[in-house]
Length: 261
Image 1 (tube, rainbow, N blue to C red):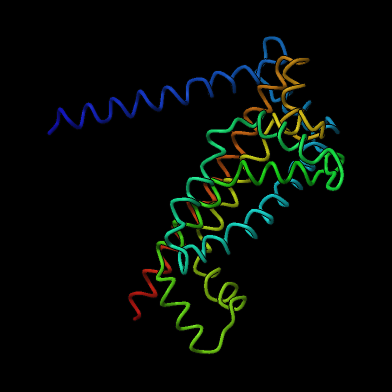
Image 2 (image 1 turned 90 degrees about the vertical axis):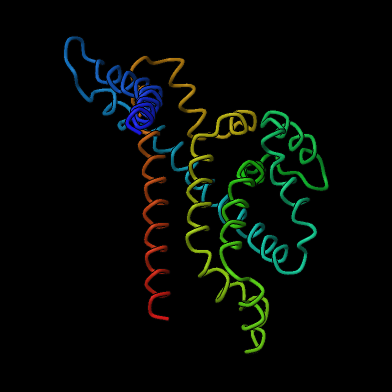
């Protein structure tokens, strides 16, 4: 028993070392901008750059639009697949997993070729970038919503709402969405983490996003890219922490409600 516990902790230690050691080295390097002194000068330099705020704001706007469009497409689709079209579920799952197979560079060239000519010309608008981001985030949003729908009795909830005279819009907004709160927040933050650091699509479509800014900074500076990498990790971890906190809070509330019943 003790031997198995030792090997368990040993592999946890190796795994933690594998992930944390490069991060610690990057953080240490980011503090060495001033010779012989450990300081946050690289972080101050990044935060003083107006391009940092411009690109971050643009990526933030794109992530919000991606989340809105993604949820508007995925939530009704997943709901009706669970309720009426269960035989199509393997097909939908296959389609949502295609972004794992199709590289972003292939996808962006396909979008450019398709939407660079009339009647639908979108290459000069950020809408094309949002469309590409929605495709990239498709597996994460669908999986989160699908797991949330599997955790509830969709058919019984819908039948109960219909017996009270509710229409499809009312059922989706007032019955399904409140029960999907944790799943929607998980999909939202995963999409945010993907969009905020995406490089290929933003570079190919020539939009001033945060990912290309990080890549450009890495070509011209030494310490600022390390500081930017740490800040990006902190942002992503904060998003993951919020997901865990919201998920745990929702679970506790469900247990309390179950106890009352």
